[in-house]
Image (tube, rainbow, N blue to C red; front, side, top):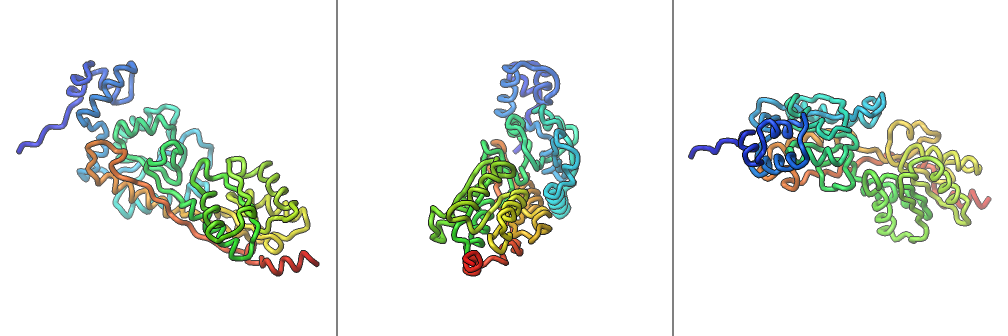
Amino acid sequence: MTAKPLPSILDVAKAAGVSKSTTARVLSGEGAASPKAREKVLAAAESLRYRVNLSARVLRSGHNRLLGLVVPSSEGRGVISHAVTAQKLEGVARGAERLGYDLQIFFADLSDPEVLRRLAIEKSIAAFLFTGQIPTETLELLDQYRIPWIGINWCNPKRPNDPHCWTDFVHAGRTLTQHMVEIGCRRLLALDWLSDDYGPFGAGVRQAWAELKMPTQHLTLHVGRKFQVGASVDLALREALDARAPSMGLLMSYEGAAQSAYRELRARGLTPGRDVAVATFDDLGTAIHMDPPCTAYAQPTYEMGEAAVEEIDRLLAVARPSGLRGAVKIVRDIPGELRVRASTQLFRSAERAERLAN
């Protein structure tokens, strides 16, 4: 049986009822085209299964294995040298080496939703990896053009089923809460700024507290971006420490908030770790150098980078005639590691009660 030839740009133009030049402008993302013409061309390309993503076709034939890691050009200087980004990048590089891919980093102006489409064609990029926020419109166009991509420790909250590999935030909240209860914290303040932009950290806190049969009224959980660091964090700490029955443990979701907790404790003549236990999410280099060193849940940054390449490899290996989204579920929740330090090791609830009574 003779294989059916792939549709050409002329086939798309005829199906859309527009000129070849208009079709070329729409598919390349360069030049002007009316919204109506653009809609017709994209619909025709989808119907004909026209492969505008030439790089993915080339990759499957084994001639090119180039992945593009995209950094928004709007990011300030030093973004790649930031601890988290650098570790993700190393993980991606090691994963690419292990699976036989080439890797290139691109700075791109993402205010133009077509920029990645053009980049994919010009550089023959097989797939993109993103380490931060990408506009929804850009993601929709990548899907329409069938260009594979994956988010690393990031997912658009409006599109939770998009391909992504990130920290298991429920595991993080559960692990930290379980540790605080195990050392004797019976009243806990927990701050969660992660759920709005990342994952359900607070849900993990609640789950662990309930499973350990701790009284609901003894858990104070604040959720929202404002509880990362700053005035809202300081206010929550003061209310918890100045209450008639003050919190025995302070669970922060950012190292900067843990520093604020230390400051508020010392302002009351209390010793962090000895009088009140403190733990935090993330271990970016600050927690270990605090005095005393702060217990922290470390994100699996290297593992996320490697896992993202593995998932892209799986995505590209699957025949996907009906398009990218929905054909394969690419979501990896990767657990991190609890690093126990003096800020919780020193705490013992019975000894604390005796000290404070005296």
